[in-house]
Image (cartoon, rainbow, N blue to C red; front, side, top):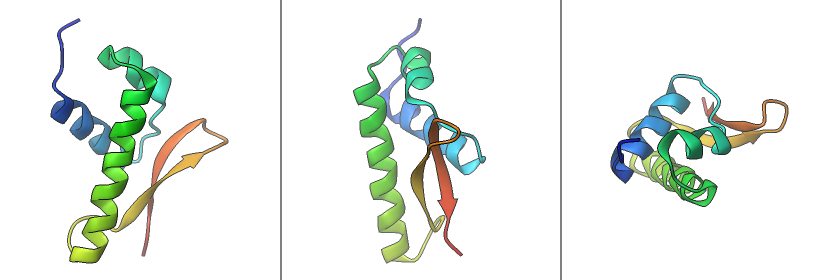
Length: 79
């Protein structure tokens, strides 16, 4: 598997969330050839970005939450 940069990985996960998809840590870890901890850190970085976007008043207003029923993370948009 070709190595993917962290930036590309984080943006790919972000795009999935924005697109309404469920992000599963195990799947993403296998997809990118990294550990689940790396994917968790990526999700945490996306959470930080979204919370800062709320403060700064730009971007998507939402938070990344774990969906127990779907066993993955999703974007919960705040209206």
